[in-house]
Length: 138
Image (cartoon, rainbow, N blue to C red):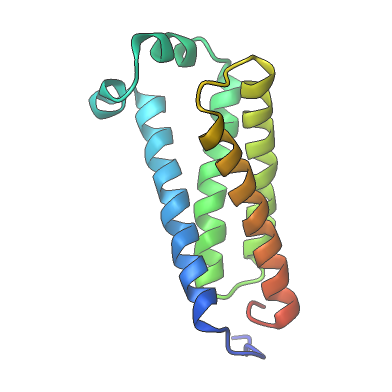
């Protein structure tokens, strides 16, 4: 077992818990969308349902990669593991693919959430790299 060189501050744990909750909400959205659950279906309009139903399957795969690697990367932060950074980078790349497609196709009705997802994915990569340099994860 690897010894951790530095004890992380309390806000490291707060950010890590928020990260796992954020990404868990993404997993919930993915499952709802992929399986078209009743709860998910009731939360969107018919127009949104039609748009999402006509998106390419590779985009759904990018969504899955983004949220599942995000959850595992966030778990890695909680476990103070260096591999968290690799998973969070993978998540960011998948987010860029997914959101890039959505934006280039003109689906800008929820721009605030789209930007929030990109910014938070960028933040988590930065945070994990900073945590490595501080010796909080190894």
